[in-house]
Length: 216
Image (tube, rainbow, N blue to C red; front, side, top):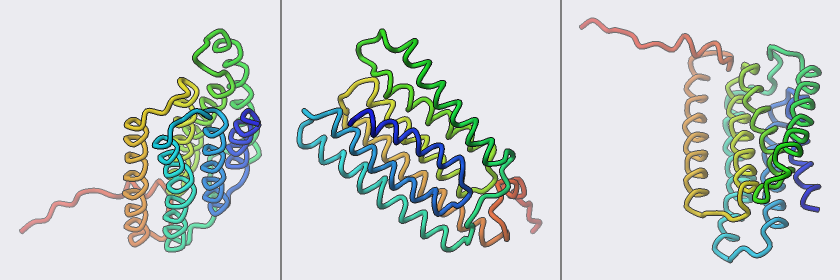
C-alpha cells in the first residue's frame, strides 16, 4: 500500500507535465498533500502523537487546504487560466517527465538498494519529482506555473527527507514549512502587483521591472 501511494505521487508529475490548465495544477497540489499524508502514515506507524498532529497540520491543512486555497484566490484575480506558452509542447514534456521518473527508479535501485537507511522507492520518486519540478520551472512562462512547480519541488524534498530517515524532526519540518508558506505568500502578493502593471502573467515581463531615478 505504501509503495502504491509513492508511485501515485510520482505519477502526479506526469499529469502536471501533460496539462496546461492551472486550475488542474492547483488541484494536483491537493492530491499530493493527501498522498504525502498517507505515505507518512503507512511508513511511520510508530510515530508519537506530537509528530502525528504536526504531520496532519503540514500535509492535510497547509499543503492540501491553505496553499491551494490561496493560489485559487490569486488565480481568480489574475485570470491566468492556462500556460500554453511553454518552450516545449506538452506531449514532449510528458515523454521527458516519464523518462526522468523511470531513470529515478533505475538509479535508486542500482545505487541505493545497498544502503539500509534509505528506501530506494522513496529516494527514486522524490529525486524524480525534484528534477522534474526544476525542469518545468525553466520551460514554463507563467508566474503561477512557476509558483506551483516550486511547491511540487518542496513536496519532493519532503518525501526525500522521509526516505533518508523515517523519523520526522519537528524542528526541521517546521523550518521547511515556514519557508514554503512565506515564499508562497510573498509570491502571491508579487503576482497581484504584476497583474496590476501588465496584462499578461509572463515571466518575461519581470525583466521590465527596474528601479527608476527621480530628479527632484
